[in-house]
View 1 (cartoon, helix red, strand yellow):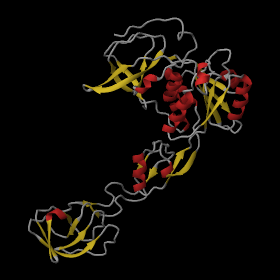
View 2: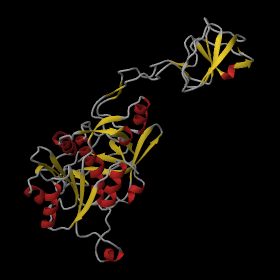
View 3: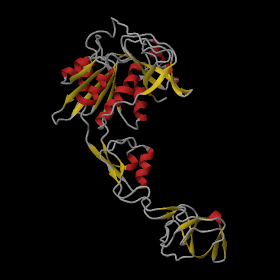
View 4: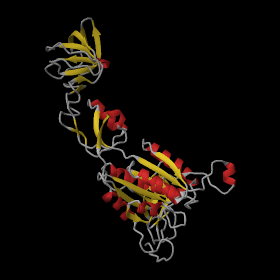
Length: 415
């Protein structure tokens, strides 16, 4: 049984909300964007804004499933049966012949089956002799034929509103003759990296600065979402942050920031946002890493909104914020309100308790019939090197010591 441990200190102060409450607030308080019509081949990764119905049958017409011979017979056919060969139909041609009992035509895969056809004989069981064919094996009626509409019928729903368009979905819709679709608009996003400490080169690094992991992390995360964002840097200067936010709030659907969101002397993101009219939805989440996270909304005169998601500056906190909160926000803007899909797995070792819920980077493996979780070293919020091995982000409940064999929940993460 898990032991409940009481804590004081960091993570136990009043005013923090839970991870689940923060996610629920993002989902409930986010106004979805409008829709747009896109060519299907440009809609990969987007969410459908309405059901898509088929306007055709699939297959469009009865057709052969093999290269062989379309045959007309009144009963099942025995080996040795002969049929008069009266023509040929290739894929793309019109079947302008009607078969009578005892007749056959050469036919190819996908070619329309002529009227009067009762079955198709694959070429491997046929011998051809002058103007006739002879079957070498018995054959049942309706063999190797594809009936019109057997996969999809006219009016059938091909894809439902809210479905994400994958490669397979786009292929399936294309086969049904769909060329355009109505999808939710993708948000226009400004990414603001705050701070004076970013090094431009090794000399800067040795002078007390650090290399920036956050901008590349965020850039490639959005690339993995097939999306483009504007990334900009701003110094830890209140006027600089104010001027930038004043411009962005009217131009973008989302301002995503890293750093400057806590209570330090140079943390200006929250006070500047509030001064500009953003309404705080929550600030500080009972989690580790990423406690001082901010979510706020600016309501414009046209009733549209700009959302501010302020992530802490430590790169591990940014990574967690992207995988969990940014993903939830982007989906909510596109009409998706389903909770994140957490997998379940068994931890292979003990973990000490912490006052805050933790997100640990882990190795997730399927072994001995179960999903097994193993925590990786170097979990501090300024460290990212274990992402070379991690493929899971696992939730560790607050105030509980964890024993090997306990069931935990997590997200599979991109390598």
